[in-house]
Length: 90
Image (cartoon, rainbow, N blue to C red; front, side, top):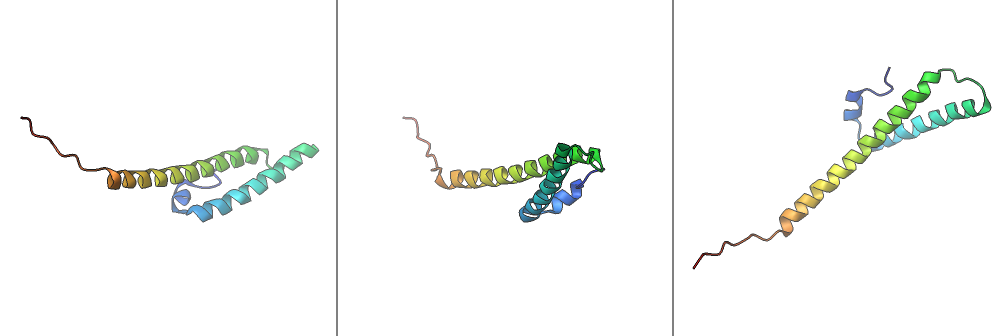
């Protein structure tokens, strides 16, 4: 069972993703502490699911940032690019 569903991810904005990311990291830290002490976690499969979900959230954040940067650079290139004038052959 996924912690966050795909359609939920699409509806989240950057601040919501960051909040969810912090909460998941805290939960993962709690599970890792249980493992380090030597006790078995309540749900050992949850550790793997938390790691995957954290990776998904980070991937989405990085994709959003890189796509925003690409659109800005493309807009700048269009503005800065001078129009080429075709020269007539003599």
